[in-house]
Length: 412
Image 1 (tube, rainbow, N blue to C red):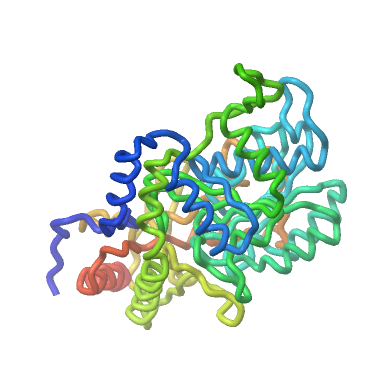
Image 2 (cartoon, rainbow, N blue to C red):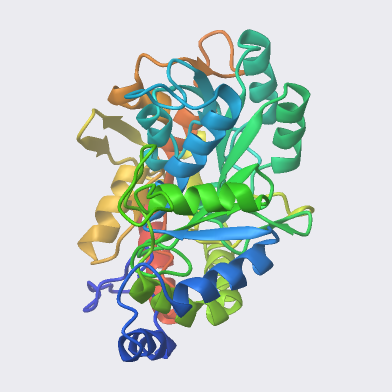
């Protein structure tokens, strides 16, 4: 069939609004709570702590701010209050997910730590518990693990938790992409010592920005609230005894989130429909979708991703900024498919480039189970994988066309 470019762009994952968001924004205006405090903030903290299953939640300006303060707090718990002009992890090694967005690991560096990247396992595309165990054997003094749930798919977090516990390590759980995902009946964002989610514009529930930190200690929650409002002491004037940050969430952003939260289960169902439609529509092609533990986990299906079989990859070459390929009949590659989707006005993305491959972290240690020069798992998935258009607002008919575009890349 003839395929023409979409008149309206098909996005990877666009914000999905329902109208209730305006109600709570107007409520903030009417009550003049145009600040980093107010009923919207109080309400989403209450709702999300109950939903995720933690005692406390603190609304912050973005997911990265939440990660930063979680990692700083973990560092102080482990190593004490840092000296002036030093980070809470100064000189300390930290184990971290390798295949993730760099926001997961940058806060380790903010606090003076040294990330050591743990390779991915194929079952979920998340941190490999066996590689983590190997890492502790090599670096037994490490006391902090930062683990992400990729694309809304839960990691084998109980196994990771067990490894960390055996070695007396704390966990910061980055559930930025996985709000609403469950592992063994428990919400992601509740397994770590400190946990975060994100409300960035492309997330399954958005505030255009915003993040949330979860913990089970009132003292810790109050510490985060204090840090996030410039660490002002209880005095009649502005008194400061420790480093602070401007990281509290706006009550207006909280209103957008408050309006969207009732639709979370609907969003997950629609994302699951997109995933299953790709799975059915791409049958017969030498590809698979991003996997998950079907027995134990319930992803939120934030992004549907595709992995091309190794023997079906056409020649593809990437440098640090560009990529090219040579088409072969019956084969394709991420570069060809992404360029073809873009030609038809649809947005896909490469898989996250693993952190150990990033120029900024090229000198950091990387732990993999692969031997004898075999390509590590994360690099292999990055080479052969891509994120497909996964927008909730995409119609069935539009997704059918996306599927046909992908098929054509293999046929011609």
